Amino acid sequence: MQNSSLYAQPAQTPTPAQAAANATVLIFSLLITTVFLVLALIGLWKMYKKAGKPGWATLIPIYNTVVYLRIIARPWWWILLLLIPFVNIIVTFIMAVKLGKSFGKSGLFGFVWLGLFPIVGTLILGFGSAQYTNPGSGSGPASGSPAGPTQAPMPPAPAA
Image (cartoon, rainbow, N blue to C red; front, side, top):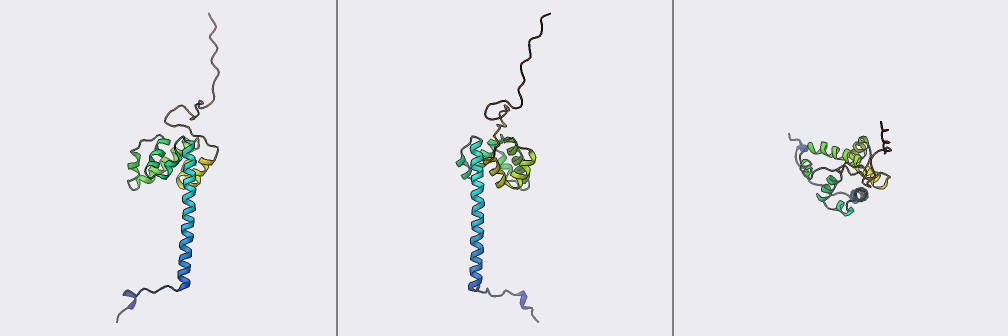
C-alpha cells in the first residue's frame, strides 16, 4: 500500500483569479519596498548634507558606508567588521549609537531610532533640528562654536 502524498504531485496551473491575486500581492509588495527605499535614500541624503558630505554618496554601495564611517569618525576598515556574521550586528548598533551622538542625540536615540528603525531615524536627523558635531575634531559643533557654556575670564589677582 503506497501513500500518494509522499510522491511529487504534478504542478497545478493557477486559476485566473489566483494569478490575479498573486500579481496584486507582488505589485503591492514592490510598491511598498520602493517607498521604503526612497524614504531611506532621502533621509540619508539629507543627513549626509548636514554632515557636510555629498548627498549623492548615499547612492553608491560601499562608498556610502565609507562616508558613514567618516561621519562617525571611525576607520575605513570597520567595513571588514560588517562582513563577519554576528559581529556585524554589534558593529551596526555601535555605528548607530555613534551616529546619533554625532548629531547631538543620546545613545538611546541612536540605538532605537538609528539601530532598530533606521529609516525613521535618518529622516529625523535629516529633517529635524539636530546639528552635526564633528566627533573627530574634539572641538564641539561643526559650526566652530565651543561645546558647552563659556566662562568669563578670571580677573587678575590683586598685587600684594
